[in-house]
Image (cartoon, rainbow, N blue to C red; front, side):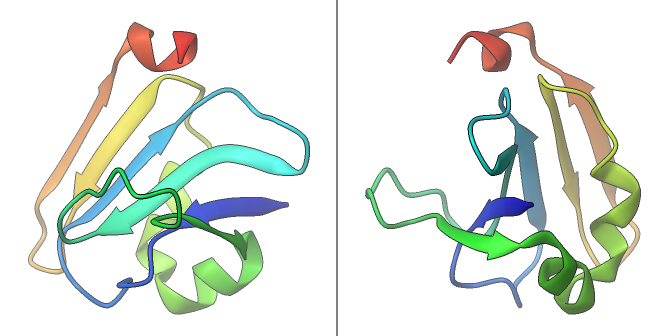
Amino acid sequence: MEIGVSDNLTDDPIHGLRHPKEGDMTGWYIWTGEWSDNDDFFKPFCAEHLLQTRPQIVKYLGLDEGFRFIIDNKGYEDVWFNEKIKEI
């Protein structure tokens, strides 16, 4: 099971969004820092290794397609649904 992640997973806040599953990809894309449209911004990453790196996101990975979240290490949390994500 793989998740698309950005290179800079040590920064805050952590952003996540879930597209529909495709192949071995869960549909989850996780990043920190500024978003980039570069083709190499997201790289496949084993979900188990991601949870070892950023364990605070485990409770969000059960969210369905179309959900997004933003969290940080200071306790900020925002979770919402966006129907348009399911259509991309």
